Length: 220
Image (tube, rainbow, N blue to C red):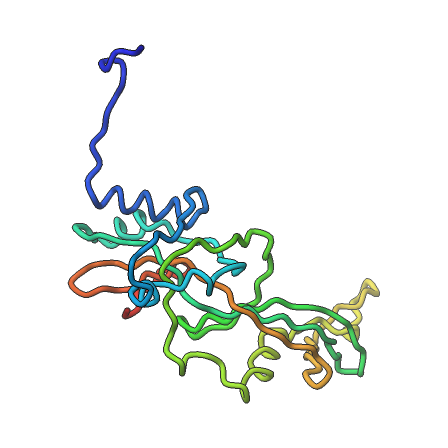
């Protein structure tokens, strides 16, 4: 039996508890699960646990306490949530200026919150999504069917130094031109699935969404 005097105690305020829980859930250290409630209708308004089964979530790139400290924001509460996004998989060929072809595969993130599309170079750190409130973006923020091939091709396109160039005095050849290697969209196999972005609901004068990857605030 240990004496109470041998332990150090720290009383946390609600803001600190909220931040600690949010970090632990989004990092995967704390597993969130749905509680039983009497009304299924009310549950559906908050989240649909089945909707995220097997869905992966990206890791946050910001730390909420540092983010708020840098901006001098205090006296707020926050709660973790997830933001819906899409992950695109493209299997196809890059075509060079001389008709050369090079097979490849690319994983691309469509972030409808920042209206951006970017290559995901490392997907090994993805983790299974916890059961949290999931927010959908405005419908118009998603890529339309007519723009998908064009926008994905822009992200995949590469500029490479050509083999032709200028011969120096030493006899070496220095490439001067950048050649464009483009995706052959007509022969590409393109598919997409759901992926989630971590974030927080920030309760200020009005409720805002803090994007866990780019650190920007969006209306909830």
